Image (cartoon, rainbow, N blue to C red; front, top):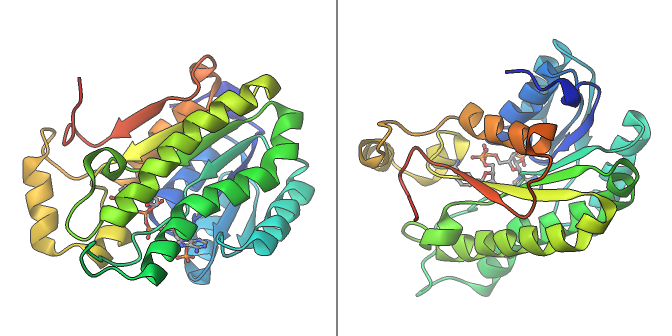
Length: 253
Ligand SMILES: NC(=O)c1ccc[n+]([C@@H]2O[C@H](COP(=O)([O-])OP(=O)(O)OC[C@H]3O[C@@H](n4cnc5c(N)ncnc54)[C@H](OP(=O)(O)O)[C@@H]3O)[C@@H](O)[C@H]2O)c1
């Protein structure tokens, strides 16, 4: 699918060294966008994504810990300077980190899961805002269906952090509408990326696929397609909304 209006847009995708972020970065490059490929610990993954991006369009490799205000500021400035601004920001970087049930979870884990998933969205968005104001751009936050369901075993604090991302999305949509900036989110369900290779067993992955009405777990590309739609003019009058991409695993009236 082609979105003519995306051609030439400057798109920063956090956490694009792997999984959903990598697929999103490559999909934007196929639309002719200049793409900021960002990594933190997985440089090789970032380089691989950038190589794929460069088959279609131009881009730049960026490194930052999205929990750190200074690193985020440097990364965003580096991207905007090279690209000549920012039109689209995809706040995708995030992680479950590990499974810790409430009964035994540590304060260190609590703070890290919120810093990785919530502080990150706040910091990157704040740093990118001056550029997004100039372009009347668009933001897509990657939340999780766990923010609605409470998450699986040992993922309660992660789920709470993703619920905060959902509320941030609505609050940002209200605050930034005056600048013509739209803010939406995509809520992935069970998506086959490094995330579940790390945190779920083969048996858990098989059961998730079996329980999904569409009969399979999602792919990173399934999620990326929804991100592109929300970032494009096709969603020009949509803000403060979310699209759940989960094959029908979690449905709500
Ligand atoms: N897979 C699913 O089923 C699923 C479901 C719901 C929501 N999600 C959400 O979707 C997003 C992408 O997940 P994924 O499945 O694609 O997982 P993934 O393959 O593990 O990718 C996670 C990305 O986040 C980056 N990241 C993590 N912590 C970071 C930090 N402190 N600073 C900078 N970057 C950091 C990683 O970068 P490095 O490796 O370079 O450090 C990587 O690029 C996450 O927000 C996740 O919570 C995933």
